[in-house]
Structures are given as structure tokens and as C-alpha cells.
Amino acid sequence: MISNTVFAPPAEDLPTALLIGGDRVTGSSGGTYDHIYPATGESNATIELAGDREVDRAVIAAKEAQREWISMPPERRRDLMFDLADAVKADVDRLSRFNVHDFAVPVRTSPGHVMLAEGFIRYYAGWVDKASGSSTPVSSKFDVNLIEREPFGVVGIIAPWNGPMVVVGLNVAPALAAGNAVILKPSELSPFTPLRFGEICVEVGLPPGLVNVLPSGPEGGAALVRHPGIGKIHFTGGGDTARKIITAAAPNLTPVATELGGKSANLVFEDADLDQAAILAAWQGPLGQSGQSCACGSRIMVQDKVYDAFLERFLKVIDSAPIGDPFDPSVMLGPVVSQASTERILAIIDRAVDENMGELITGGRRLGGELSSGFYIEPTVFGDVDNRSPLATVETFGPVVSVMRFADEAEAVAMANDTTFGLNAFVQTANLTRAHRVARQLESGSVWVNRNSDISPQGPYGGYKQSGTGRAGGLEGLHEFQQVKNIRIGM
Ligand code: TXE
Image (spheres, rainbow, N blue to C red):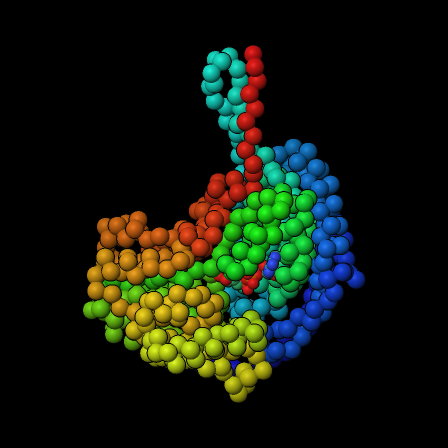
């Protein structure tokens, strides 16, 4: 449902310089980039891009800041991280607007990214003075054997464009709590929110250089990965890029943790609340962030008996979602991130139609008229999709989902697991026994029963198979940024 025309974004003092050692840096060796606002296709700022020289400078600043950080008493580091959480919360309006300027996520849902980051920062602040090592008995019974967890030193965190504040929460927060300094490399497609976050880190009194923010494209990211001063890389993004990064990290044997894509199944059993399941499938599918989420439930599998009844409800939710200006608080659906992404997604749709991978039930076109200058694609649903077709096996990362049928539980599990990905899976059923039985058979790092993927700091989030190895959240998320040392003292 097209809700309105799209207007030029509100004038705003968007940050464009790199942030290194607490200083704004311009004239960078990576050059500059005219950032495009996806809702109008027009440039909203020209930003600096980090290159080799700026990565070098950031590593030097980070090493010095990390020494200062780890020498502070734990309660001081804890309190500074609580102050950081408070400051992020206080700045939620501006950070939410910057998210819209970044990648045109609707202003109505943007605060969710910021408050997720705030929640993770607050959660990991609480661990700073509580995470401890352990001691164990050893062969010489009077010896003391200590098992300690220590920071890597300087970690490089590479973020995708679709959730820089999500990555601040999931990865920057635990990295800091574990005692590291951070070089955050956001995509050039979403630089403003992470740069503002970096400014907040300086404003609350974190050592300058503890958090450095270096927006860039692949080149700047590659410079970070191959730098010998980086103790660990955490990468969130696509599988193809992950392969390049792991290869580039090999010469220094730099460890790499990955949070990658998904092609998540959403299983709707005949006993599910179909109204609720339709709403969840729509927002976890083509509507939420226009499907540009690693957690997108893009393969909706419905038990035969309720397929038509579900589809009717599902399409009603899709058709009622207001699409338009992401700065309009009534709008729930914005554009996709770029012209390139638009062309890529439309090509996937055209191929699916040409090769009859499923029945195109709704959508499939770029929106014109008042929205023609932006990168708007209709929410698109294919029915009776072949689960082995490219439409169901390759991540689309756009507002396109596949609906398919299954006869019984065994077939549902087999279809859901028949993928190289394993990030999320969703199960809609009123039967608790079935929910537990199915959840344990699904090959994915997260299973969500009768609810959306509401990532919380208490539960470790991450993938199976080709959806990556990293975990964000919980103690597992803290351990991601620590290395283990065994100290044995002879008596
Ligand atoms: O990824 P890209 P995008 C995944 C999502 C999709 C992808 C989309 O599933 O597959 O991310 O995000 C930098 N060396 N997730 O298009 O292209 C690049 O500049 C070093 C999963 O941004 O892989 C950007 O900053 N860096 C996730 C980042 O890598 C390089 C949630 C990602 O870029 C590089 C969100 C190189 N050679 C999205 N090439 C989850 N699992 O939680 C690019 N980059």
C-alpha cells in the first residue's frame, strides 16, 4: 500500500570524517564517497573513506588506548560502559534519524536498532567486574593452576550496511567489556550512525582511540584484515566476502569470527494461530527492513491443510503495509539500499518467473510514480516454490519470499534443513511437545517458536553451517573476544 510521496531528508549535520584516536580525520587515503540516500536516490553527504594509512594510524591509537583501558580498575571500566549505555539512550532520537539517513530504514522501526545496542552495552557493562577465570587441581597437588581469560588487544569489527547499531551492540559492546580496543569498519553505505556512536564514546570519557570508526568499502576492510596489529577480526556480512576475509587473514593467521547470511525457514503447522502466524511471517519476511535482514524468514513452509487459509491472511497483511517516506512515522516499509541492490533483486524475481521456480502471487516490480526516484520494490511473494530452486537456496536480501507446502512434521524438518545456511528457524505451533521436538531437529543457531527474532543480550545469537561461526550475546559473546591462558605455579 503506497502511503505517500518521498521528500528530501531533513537537513542534518551528518558526520562525514573518520574518527581515529578521538580525532575527526579528513583527507584520507581511501578518498571520498558521495553517500546516496536510498529513498530519493540523491546524495545526502560526501564521506571520507579509510585506506591503509588510516588503518595504520587507528591501530597505533587503539594499542595505546587499550593499554590505558585494561589498566583501569574493573569497576571504572564497568561504570564507563554504563555511562556509554546511558549516553546512547539519551541520543536515541538522533541515532535513529541517522540510521534513516544511512540506509532508509523507516524511522518508526529505527529506534529498535539503537535500543538493541543500548541493551547489549548495558548487559556487557555488567559483566566487566564479574567475568572471572578459574583454577583447577593439577598433577603436583600443591601447584596452583589458573585459567585466565585475556583480551586480544585490538580487534577489527567489520559491519554490514543493514545494521551498524546492531553490530555495535552484538560485537563492539562485548569486545570492550572483554578489555579490547576496537576498530569499527562500517560499510560506506551506512557510516553516519556508527560515526555518531564513536563521538559518543569520546564524549562519555572512554580513552580516545578505544573505539575508532573507519567507514570504507572493501579496500578499507581488506587493509584492516591484513594488518599485523589486529588480534582478531569479527565479520558480519555475506558468505562470499567472508571467504575473501578468511583468505586475507591467513598470512598472519589472524582469527576470524563470522556472522553471515541466512535463508531461514518459517514452519507453519496446521494447529498454529493463523492470524498471528500471518503477521509474524509478513514482518519477519518481506516487510521487516524490506527483507534486508540476515534473520529474514524467506522460506515460509505451510502444512498442506492450512496453506490456503494462511496465504489469504498473509497476503492481507502484506497489502496493508504502508510503503513510502522512511521519515514518515506511519510508514512501515522503505526502499532497498541501493540501485545495485534493486537491479540484483529484480533480476532474481525475473529469473524465478522465467524459470517457473514458483507462482508469482503478488509484487515483483519496482515502484514508480511518487517513489520512482527511490529504490522501492513491491513486497513480493512466490507460491508453491521448489525448495531446491535458486529462489529458495540463494539469499535474496530483499522483499521477496517463497511459500511452499509440507505434508507432515518429518517433511517440514527435512525441507527446512535442506539448505547450506543455518542462522534462524521459526516454528508456529500450539503444540509444545512438537515445538521442542522440531526445534531440536532444526539445523540452525537460533530457533524462534511463535515469535519474531528478537535478539536479546542474554541469548547467544549466531549460525550453523554457512551462516557463520560467531556468537553474540550471553557469556559466549564475551568469550568471543577473549583468549584463554593457563598459568601454573609450582609450589
Ligand atoms: O555484506 P558484504 P553487505 C549479511 C546478509 C548479507 C550481507 C549484506 O545476510 O549476506 O550481510 O550486507 C566489507 N575485506 N548479514 O552487503 O558485502 C564491506 O565494506 C574486508 C548477516 O554489507 O559482505 C562491509 O562493511 N571487508 C548478519 C562488510 O564487509 C570487506 C546480519 C559487509 O559487506 C571486503 C546482517 C573485503 N574483501 C547482514 N568486502 C548476521 N548474520 O547477523 C566487503 N567488505
